[in-house]
Amino acid sequence: MSLDRRSFLQGLGAGAFAALAGCTTSAGARPAPVPAFGRVEPEAFWRSVRAQYRLRTDPIYLNTGGVGPIAQPVLDEVTSTTLRLQEHAEHEHEPSFSRSRATVAAFLGITPDELCFTRNATEGNSIIAAGLDLRPGDEVIFESHAHPGGSFPWGNQVKQRGIKVLVFEPDHDSAEGNLARIRELVSPRTKVIQVSHATCTTGLIFPAREIAEFARERDIWFHIDGAQTVGMIPVDLQAIGCDSYAFCGHKWLGGPHETGGLFIRRDRLDAVATTGTGAYSGEWPDFAEPIRLFAAASRHEYGTRNAAQVLGLAEAVRFQEHVGKERIAARGRELAEMLLAAFADIDGITILTPRPAAMRGSMTTIRHARAGGGQLSGYLAEKHGLRCRMVSEQGLEALRISTHLFNSPAECERIIAAVRASVRDL
Ligand SMILES: Cc1ncc(COP(=O)(O)O)c(C=O)c1O
Image (cartoon, rainbow, N blue to C red; front, side, top):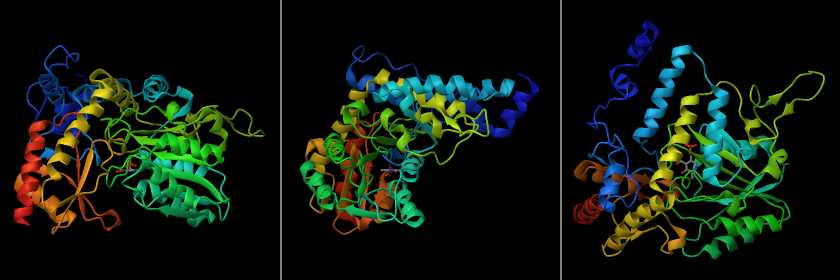
């Protein structure tokens, strides 16, 4: 090992050293690769998926809607790239970004020139909010359950450009109901409709394709905040037909922290003005002429970036493809359905997640008759070793449980028993 590399690793501390060296710390032996589905019985397959994560078994991790863990192949990609780049102090932006762009774009059913790499979903939402041509009094519609990463970018435009926001209460019983609530708010001043593809509160999935059609007929921009959906359910952006879609890598996709992307439909590219530009956004050979931005969504990228993270994001996509994105969605849903079925029979627990199957995925939100969300989540963590997330937004006082590919039916049994105990104890 060269001196430079050794001191670089020492500077990172022992835990990081172990990770970068590709050996394991808390998770024990290095996992065998996940076999092709069908080579072993299904639960053995899912155990081999689980073995890819360094997650401790205590507490049981049920907060992928907050941030998701990354699997061993992703960790390997990030750490080996980090080490390799340090050997010659290059950032390798160009080859890494183009290769990753092709992989991630194919995963979403779009072309590489429609994808910009961002640092998180909020950044993608912000590029759209700040970049569209909006005038004072122009109206933007979104749901009241929007995460701050989805609502603040518009609040900022209220402050900066005097636009108006109109919010609707999500209808948890009917997809058509949601379309009707949006329709009621549309006026000649409506310029944008935005929804969370899945809300961060109750996991409600909006009818994205139908809203896209509705918006297109009225020439209204349709932007989707997909922070909670990419990696949880298969997302085909071509089929949805929205104008733009922001997502992050660090939740359901299992990508490194601070990764994400923004899709802008190719024929809508010029409708989104750049709010930040620099190297990688385009060319400016003659200062007397305007900047020539690239004819691609990557015009919104600029400056030195971390290639290891973006290559890690592409590896996360490959890992999901290997496991099977439909299979991952079905697994998360099957576990969520186990919870829903049991919670429905517990007196003192109300299910807030929509009941129609098309309106939900792998998140389950419940409310306790006597305990608020914070109290319930604290109780589940302390007494039962469950890491869930309280839902305080909109005064819901609820608890959200995310079930993803590394969770198991046995863990769901523990959650059910703990929630049952909570109605006795709290
Ligand atoms: C619907 C929604 N939008 C945006 C965000 C913010 O995501 P990020 O931290 O990637 O910006 C979240 C995070 O929970 C979310 O649930």
